[in-house]
Image 1: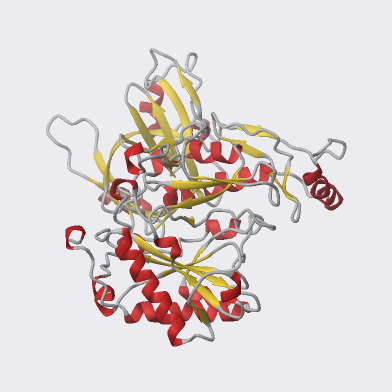
Image 2 (image 1 turned 90 degrees about the vertical axis):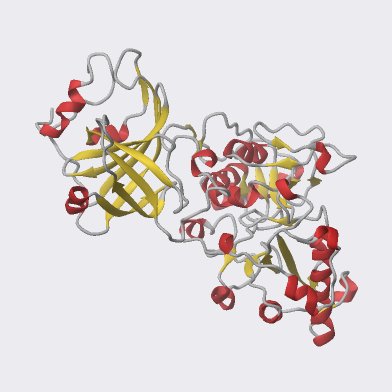
Length: 519
C-alpha cells in the first residue's frame, strides 16, 4: 500500500474487499515518460475521468461532457481526489453501493509532456501540456476557476490548443466518433491457412500470400463489431486480407469519419475482392449495416433513402459487408441543394507521365488563385490527383457545376496540348481531363482516407501543396504503407476555417446564378 498522503481520500471512499479497484502500491512506475488516461465512467451520471501521472499519483479531474477537439469549446473539469498509478489500467464494473458505482472503460491513454514546470502550473492554476494518445493528441491546457459559494470541489476548464489536431465541434465530436475502449476488445488472432479451399478468384492471391509467409495481423475489434472470413484475400496483387482492411479502418476511423459525417455517402462493395464483381450503392435498398444512418427520403425523391456513415460501428460494419470505397456528395445533408466544395479530378489519358499530372495540378491551382479561390490537394489513390475548393454553401448545383466546367474549358483552351476539353479515353490521349462532372447533383468523389478498390489498394490521402513534388504516383500510399501518414499531423490544417465565396470567380466567367438561389 502506498504511503502517499494524497491517496488517503481515495482509500477512504472505497471498500477494497468489495470493489476491484486498485488500492495502490508503494512502488512507482519505472519510466522516463508520464502516463495519462481518460476513463469513460458510466456512473449515476456519465462522465469522463481525465488523469495525469505526476509525483507518484494520477492527478484527476471529472469532465462531465468529455473532451472536445475544438479550441473554442471549454469543457468543465472538476478536480477530484488523486488516484494510484495502477488505476490507469483499471477497467470494469464498480459494484452497486460503492463510491462511483458503474462501468469504467479506458477510453484513451498514452503519454503526456508538460510544457513548462508542471508543479508550478498546478499551483498557479494553469497547466499546459501535450498529449500523445490514441484519440487525444497535441496541445492542451487545464485552467483553474474560482470556486463558487457552496462548491466543495475545485472547477477547472479543459481546453484544446490550436494546432494540427484541433477540429470544430460542429463538424467532429471525438467522443461520439470514438466511443469505445482502447483496451478491452475481442482480439482475433489469425493464421494463414494453406489448406483452406478458396474461391477461384482468391486462389492465386492466397498462394502468393503463403509463399511470402506474410503474417496476418491481430485485429482488435471494438465491441459489437463482427469480422467474418478475416483470412480472405481481398487483393490478389498484394495479398491483403479482409483482416488487414478492417485493421486499417479501425486505425483510420477518426480521419475518415471526419470526411463522411454529415454527407450522403455512396459505397463501393466488392464481395469478391478487387477484380471481381463490384456494386456501387447510393441508396438503402436491402442494405443492412448496424448503425448506418438513413437520411430523409425527401432529399432524393423517387428513390430509397440516401445513406450517411457517422459512427465507428457503421464504418466498420460497412467493411464487414465488403465495402472498400467510400464516396461523398459535395454538399452536406442539412443543406443538400447548396454544395460546399468543388472537386477537380485530374484524370490522365494514355501516354501521360506522372510529372505531367503534377504540373497539371500546379496549373489548376494557379488558375484558381487568379480567381481568388484557395484550394487543397489529395491523391486519388488511383492514377491521378484531386484538387478541392471549399465554398460557402450559397449557390445551387447548376451554378457551381457551371463554374467548374468553365475552369476546365479555360484550361483546355489555354493549353490544348496538355488539357482535354471533354471526357472519354479517345479525347484524353496524351492529355489530362480536369473532370468537372463530379460537381453535379448526386455526383460523388472518393473521400479522403478511403481505400480504392484497385490492385494494391491505394489510399486517397490529403497532402500539402509543398509535398506535391515528392509524390511518386496517385497511389503513393497504400493500405500497407499509410500507417505513418495516419499518425502525422493533418496536412489540411485550416480547411474547416476557409470561408470563401465563388462570387468573383462566377463574375469572371460571366456566370449569373439564379437570384432566387443566391444569397
